[in-house]
Length: 411
Image (tube, rainbow, N blue to C red; front, side, top):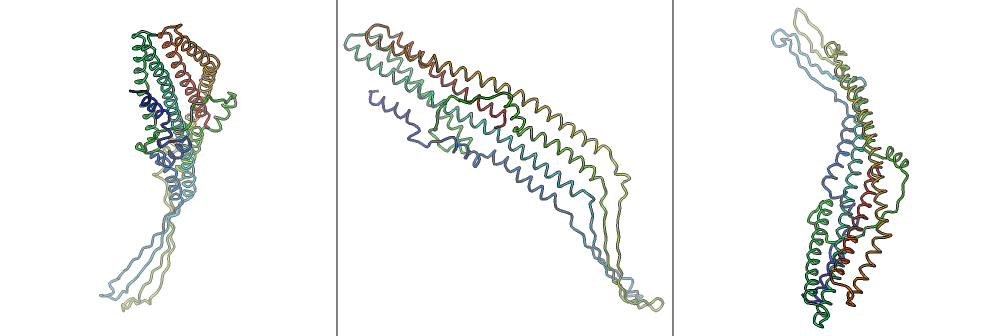
């Protein structure tokens, strides 16, 4: 492989975002909301809850019945009759209780959906940062490959001039091939990370080949107590648990009212034709009736229904308290991890990165003057590469720690 082909390949790897379909964070999140099948499926719970609330507001339709009677009119002329009856069941306080339960179920669904999105967005953001890390590591390996390729080319010329031994030249070429394999592996890692982003967007075959943005050390500072206060206000899973407590209370009221029998109101009208029987003649007449049916709740009394409702309410309260305790623990642990990550990144920024660059530059300069061995140069190059990768990983860990802290607070 000649030098021109080598430079062309490296250039293509470094400029992969410029020559292919790229993806930025805002577009990525918008695509998840529009095309992610799981997100759209969860969002349908809101429409289902609204439909159930609408259904809870409906009342039973009245019933209309007709009846025809023939009192042996054809044989003894006792006449005929036609009657109509309109009946309606009246539920005492049940409708309002059902509506309140449906409203509360909708509130629980909304809080649960918000909590689902809180976790999905955090996970999707971490996946995006993982792709940024893969891109950063690819760039580190690309730069390392360029450095070792230039060194190998220089050593080839120096060997021709008799300045170095053949073993030194072969060693530098072996390092170049090893760096090329590392570069190929990093490219595959980036492509796979981008495929995962496409899957999050609802289209694994979208063909994303580039990602916009870069790893950057977070600069936010937080007060732990303020974070805890914010978490108790913002966490959607806690809100869902508290709404579930209210729902259990509403369901208890509904269970009590469902045991109340419905009252049935009946309105009737009856028309009788003329009776022409000689022994008991009668003129035609219209009759009216009003009826009220009140069931007696003798056999339907069941204390178990109310007891079950009370137990569900107690269970919801305990779950809510458990979530509050869990939130407090999550925030404290996420805060500690974030603070430790910040300190680690600062250490790389202030000491390690600068020192590694200085050592590498010095070794390269000394090697070109024949004052040091190739092994020392390769060791310095390897150390510099590892520190660069470790630094990128530390920044990534710090960004992820911030996401986890924000997740725990409910932002």
